[in-house]
Length: 327
Ligand SMILES: Nc1ncnc2c1ncn2[C@@H]1O[C@H](COP(=O)(O)OP(=O)(O)O)[C@@H](O)[C@H]1O
Ligand SMILES: [Mg+2]
Image (tube, rainbow, N blue to C red; front, side, top):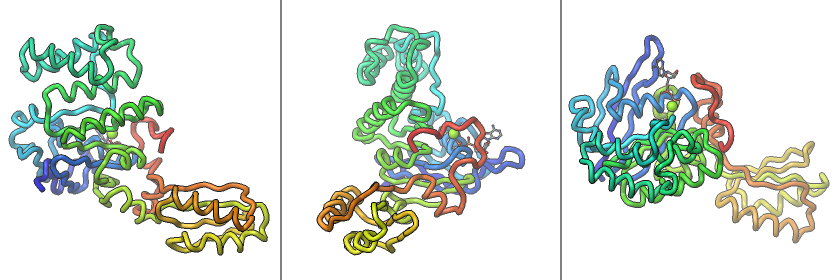
């Protein structure tokens, strides 16, 4: 497979601070890669390098077959980018914003207007097309910003934290939009702080920390690396713990953990939801009274803790904590 994005040994320093520390990354054409990492990991810096906005101190980078450092101008018409903070003009309408992007890409007046209308329709913004963006919700702004990235039909797309700061509903809407988009064959690099988002949207995940890719794989591979799904069960009576252990042994893909004091048992499982349903049935059959039961999936924090020995949060946050909510 041809790689649409190739980065080798990217280094970028801000004074003494090393933002990119030899970043290597490959994104095969027509696939989605999520660059997953906490605040300050270097995600935005990397995207700015890929999109010609920032020159690295060293390293090589090729996007859509074009050497980014040698031919930035030629590259610009072949990529689309949408930022962590929606870059739309507040005082223009949605339509005017997109039309302006079309003009910047030299699409011509008629084509720019047509493209603006198409995209507003597609992103469910047709009704708001003639209203100034000032009155748009956060979700509408992100959709408009994303539409802007698509005006020139670029084969390679960069989305920097597309859903950070959105409410859960708007996040789900945007995920749908992004999924449709990549179904059409666009190569996408998106950055995110959310394991769940990477899981849902990406074919491959590259985990970034301190300016370096520290692990790469599918969501399942990463979760397996940190131990995968676990059933956490609290029983009513301490006497039931041993019965529960026997009943659940067949689901365990690793060591079962007992905490008698808490009347709790933790069972590593694969195919978590199905295992949970089966396990509850098995416990009911043995008349084990369940106080509380749930499926615990690895979060970004678990992945980080396992890979680096430190928590994902609280390492070099530079722009306030936007990582609350879905994580
Ligand atoms: N213009 C800048 N000047 C100085 N330091 C910067 C600048 N931009 C980013 N940094 C620092 O570089 C590191 C990586 O930042 P960034 O790429 O924005 O991370 P992320 O997008 O993953 O949150 C952080 O420590 C950040 O504070
Ligand atoms: Mg960022």
